[in-house]
Length: 72
Ligand SMILES: [Zn+2]
Image (cartoon, rainbow, N blue to C red; front, side, top):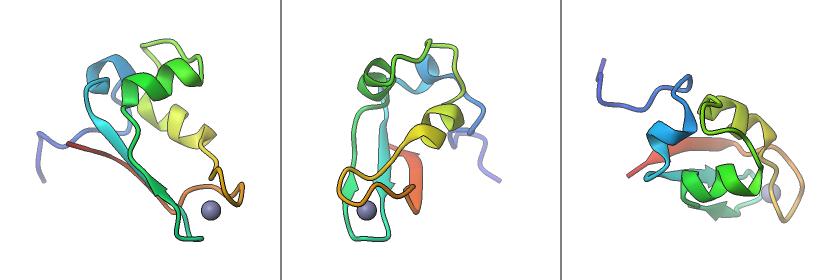
């Protein structure tokens, strides 16, 4: 276990400076800043990051991402 790893229950404001590594099964991957992602999806800053991840859809195929995890 590594306590410094971001937790899926962490609110977005805590992770705003990190990027979210998002990869889809179709091969598309992006790394948006979590702060910018929260603004784009208009979620309150206290929203757990997993709630944002649940809303993500691939911009190419519309599928849910195969990988979505905070990254430095
Ligand atoms: Zn895709």
